[in-house]
Length: 294
Image (tube, rainbow, N blue to C red):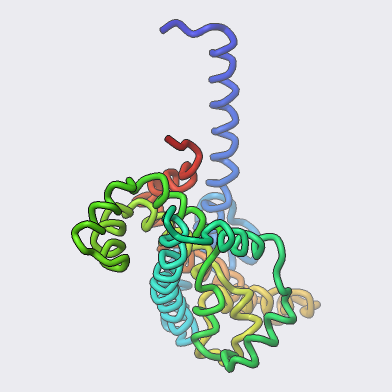
């Protein structure tokens, strides 16, 4: 099909825009990887841009030997895996009944859930509630308060409502299946796309990148996740740079600390970068859920 002049102009502008967006995303990543793979002296001197200077893996070796980094990484894996399982269970338990047309009062309960998206108790009341529940400085504080995100629940409800035919529910009911049996045997096997989307959203956004809740509610360093350790490392480096008048006094320490910061960033985001290409199609499908009905 022959393109018109306006269509060609659109494709050209679209390509330029996509290339520009790609550069914005790729350049910072290349810089971070280059800093992490360069010698500490080159990093501190600011000589690293998009290519490693004096390539070395010594910084990664030093970090992996650090007990705090290893503990934080294992904690993050625990929070992301166990927390995501809890998220999926709670989300599906809420979304499934709200997707059923024969559930009395589903519009009312949906409105209650949507209300929490616009109004919340605030930071201080939430802190008081968590403290009174005895969740402070425990692993549960990283799992239970974020057990469900309303937006993800609405995505799951919309998927169930638009994808699972009512005839399947009626057929299961005629065969004597309970609601739990219908959910486990019929709905969940047909809902692998939305479950993959929810897993991606919860694992990355709710758990892997979470540091604020850990900073607020965790006091023991043995419970810190990798993001909080990264945040503390960056804060300590910035404090050292601000307090040091003569860099020659602590130049070696500052160089190692600055290179370690980038190495920790790489370690913390590498699993997500590896996994995301395999689940990208599910992410796009999740964004399109509910966009077209029929």
